[in-house]
View 1: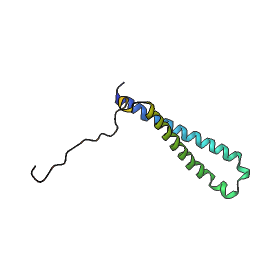
View 2: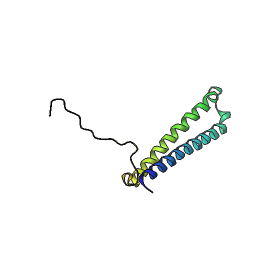
View 3: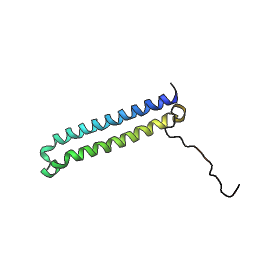
View 4: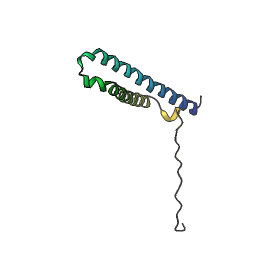
Length: 98
């Protein structure tokens, strides 16, 4: 496989991993909320679903950031992956005649 295929597969796998972590953390927090539902006041119960949704996104962000950082430390990224955005160095044109 070449670098472009590796990059595409990595992006696909990372996306699936992120969605999976989001769903698992959402279900775990929902289970915990239902377990402690009788202890929570009514005002907290009304907003708990929105809080769980936002918290699951935040948890998935931190887990994803940690996992990508761990992967970058272990794998030589430049050797296996193609850059997604290429920057081209274009020297500026001088208007003073040089």
